[in-house]
Amino acid sequence: MSVPTARRTRGLRRHLPALLLVLPLVFGMLGTPASTPVVQGDELSDAKAKAAALKKKVADQRAKVAALNSLQRGLADEIKNTRSELREIGADLTKVKKKITKMEAAIEVVKTAYEGLVAQVKAMDIELERVVGEEIAKKRELSERRALLAERVRNAYDTDRTSPLETFLSGGTFTDLLAEMSYYIDVGEQDKALATQITQDQETLAAIHQNVEATRARTNELRQETAAQKRTLDRSLKDLKEAKAALKKLEKKVAKSLREQKARYAALARNKANAAAIIRKAAADQKKLARRIDALIKKQVKRGNIPSKYNGTMRWPMSNFTISGEYGCSGYGGYAPGHGCAHYHNGIDMVGPSNAAIRAAAPGIVVVCGWNWADGADPAWIVVVAHSGNLRTWYAHMQPSCPAKVGERVSSGELIGRQGATGHATGAHLHWMVEFNGNFTNPRLFL
Image (cartoon, rainbow, N blue to C red; front, side, top):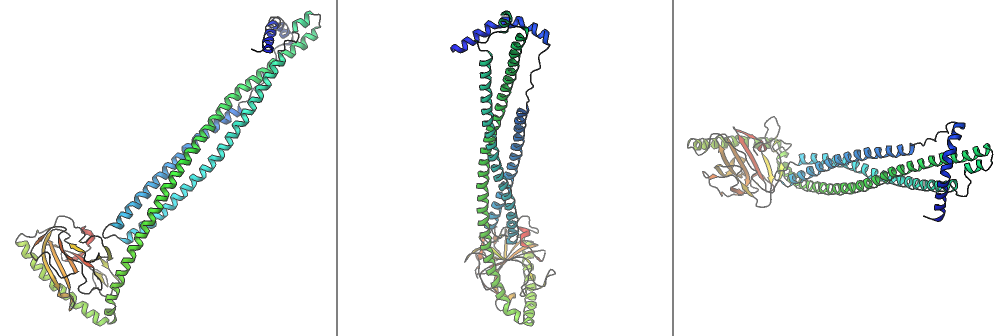
């Protein structure tokens, strides 16, 4: 303890008994002293309210981040599935194109949500700067009030001051006594109010400091979350770009095949009458062929070599291929009418690598392997496999060979020929058909 402090303490102790004797007398004459000024708790309440608001803001931000995470995961899964579809055989490019368009819209939603996070980070930076400034100002104010209280205590309890009792006993008037006591009472009440304010300032400062730390922690956390979202979004954009490039490549390949098909029927279209006659003759010849095949299959069914009904699924007859022509209505004049279409394509055209292997789509018996003279003077090489009494698959435009002989049983995936360009074909491809109950049906229904 320093010497001045010790002297003040001793002086205060020396004057205290006299003060205790005089104070009842003075209070009895003057009445109850004025009440202590009330210290407002607005700043503390404001700090607590801001802490509650920050807590709610953090909860809202985390909910938005969780929603964005869900969007990002869904988008990434969709892109992954789309890229897998593009690598699969028999990709439906129209369907994939629609999915990519949908994903592009989803990307925009994710971008908007991400930009909202970036704006939140900027807002949190500004808020952090504000609460740090508020904390600095409060520290300065608290320091100034502490210094003021210390100075007031030093002045109020200076050991050199004459006590009220000494003033009264030394012959001073009662007016002098009242003046001296008023000074002590006023100083005490003001010091008490100032001490109370300092105590509340300390509590307020603690609350503000908690807000600073919470805001700083959340700002850092949000910045990290935003960076993670950016990395995920960049990956999705990259993967989607690759998927679009793969789709474009396949579309070009299919477009080339379609141009070849158009060229194949161009000459035929120049002479519609001749084309109609050729189509009619081909249709009649195909019916004859179908009747002959029916007879062959009935014999096999009677012998027990072929089941009456097929129970199972099929597989694509080629690997690593693109589809150049789907089953159903077509705009090509070389196809005969059927199923309500002016030009009906009764199978799926598949384009694979050079000399690509063609395999049985399901287990069965080979009933035809040879030239399809029903096509006319330029026949295609075909293979027909019967899977049951009412289900068979056709493979046309193949190279002239029979890895599996007529009457032999083949398993699913067994080699039955190679891709070729025999018959009315300007390029190597496979025309795959599925005949069910005497009608050519969409092969996709059996996969």
